[in-house]
Amino acid sequence: MSDMSEPGKTNSKQKTLNLILLFTTGLVGLSTLVIILGSLFLGMWLDKLNASQPAFTMGLLLASIPISLIVMIFIVKGLINRFKKMSESISEE
Image (cartoon, rainbow, N blue to C red; front, side):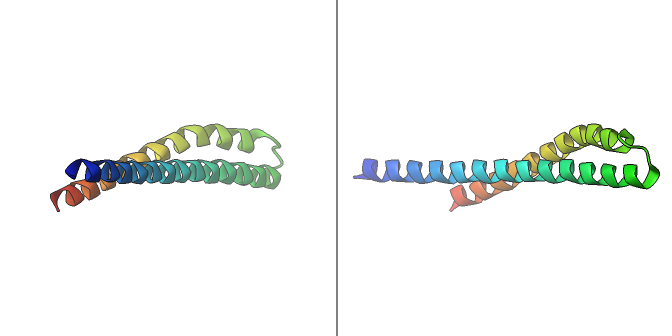
């Protein structure tokens, strides 16, 4: 009988892990999109303000690449730490 409860428990853990991965992927993708679009529109506005057509836009778009990577690392590390703590508290119960 105990063998029947284990597959359901494993299946539930797998579903939870899949949802966590989906949430993390969505959050990272959304933050990257916001950073890139923000740098694009800010660069276009600064170019229009200073009459220097592609300079600010290209500079900010190139600068957004490492910024989005750094933000991505911080988001993933933070979520991993949070979910580790949650899984430890669940396993203690």
